[in-house]
Picture 1 (cartoon, rainbow, N blue to C red):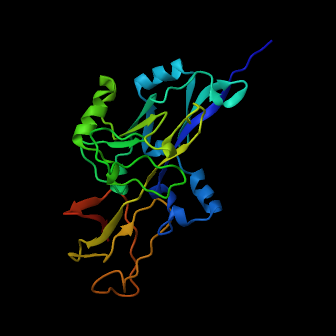
Picture 2 (cartoon, rainbow, N blue to C red):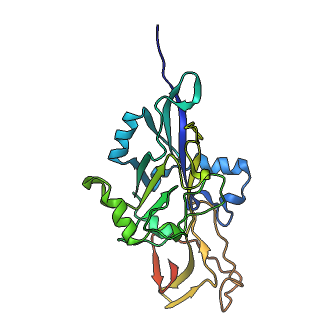
Picture 3 (cartoon, one colour):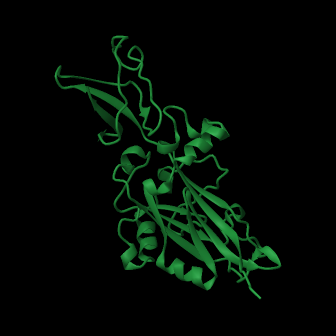
Length: 280
């Protein structure tokens, strides 16, 4: 007689990035479902980030019969469930059980095309529980149905950063861009992973990065001139942003002029403005 254990989805975390998913000035959010699927087919979070369970979280996985499974858009956590109820974990999950996942950036251009600020002494925290050291304005990790993009509001204080990093093993504490910290019962019922009966809710949490917009500066070294766009333009891997020489510059440029889109490699910050430099 053979026995096969049954596993159910405990929760999922989906990572999206508009630099890869927008098409020129057309945003991923405005696309039809069919077009979204096309963009997602060529999307993989491994291009810019690596997500791994913390060492202590791997121990929790073993103790509670959980499985970590990577996906093209993030990861899923599965757990062994009772034969009689696919929503009831085989081993009861306490409400305060916490799982942590490290986010490390593996693309050196990530900062250039991501609309965020970066600080050596602060990390981004994506959680369903507010740390005691954070204000009441703390931003909770959105769900897949929330129309929310990740902003600097998710960058926690130096005090909070030092505390959450100190809870990791020494070998894990370097180059942490962000931390996903999920507790079985969140501060709000909408963030719960299990309900009051201990049964799985199977939520899908979302981390959706926005693409950076920059002022495009065209530099003609031979003529010794440079012009920049009047407004910031989006940086995207796909599509093409048309530049209108009559309206995008002051003063207007000759109507027949053509202007290429920039790469993400040449970006400078002057005061609070970001500039993409294109040599023509």
